[in-house]
Amino acid sequence: GEDVEQSLFLSVREGDSSVINCTYTDSSSTYLYWYKQEPGAGLQLLTYIFSNMDMKQDQRLTVLLNKKDKHLSLRIADTQTGDSAIYFCAESIESGGSNYKLTFGKGTLLTVNP
Amino acid sequence: DAMVIQNPRYQVTQFGKPVTLSCSQTLNHNVMYWYQQKSSQAPKLLFHYYDKDFNNEADTPDNFQSRRPNTSFCFLDIRSPGLGDAAMYLCATGPGTGRTQYFGPGTRLLVL
Image (cartoon, rainbow over all chains, first blue to last red; front, top):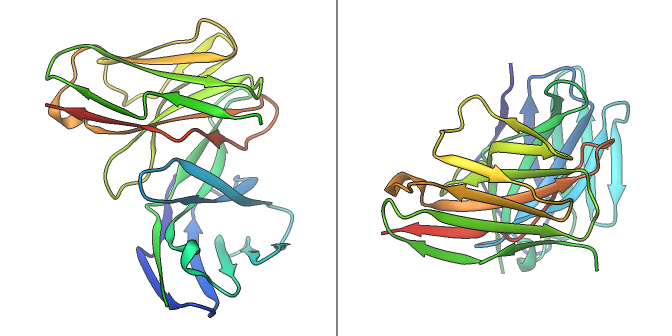
């Protein structure tokens, strides 16, 4: 089945690290994504990881993938107030032929307090 | 800069009055997607075009239609909007061989 679960809220202090967790169910997912959505805006692709990797780092962002447990996390180092947003985890699954679709979690609202 | 553009950013319509939302892209991607996102919810895929091939999600209401006249443009038509159709509508594009999707800023639809 297709189901992506995330905790709904996370609150951190400015300068701390944030860790947003996600679990997914489709073991055939080959790409997993993190998107950021600021209020009233579209989704901004932050990073993605291929399923044969267990870690990917991009500046302040670190993605960890535990394929055995179907667990994905996004760590933001030195969190800033500008990082306050909703973060969506998504998995890419094949929907027939060469078509792929994204299944999103409900999003985690990250609040960064000064 | 290559991008996904949605017009208008805000749209107000009346109950039952047809409305069309527009999406264009300069990325030259094969695939264009339309999502509906209601408040505090995940985006929900309505349908997508792979080139000219239209792929409808099974639970997308008949009230929602789409047109893709060329590679760059894709339209979402809501034939008879109801109050429950008020939402953010997100357009995304993706290369045919990849899975990554790039989103536009969205159109927020209000139905009075």
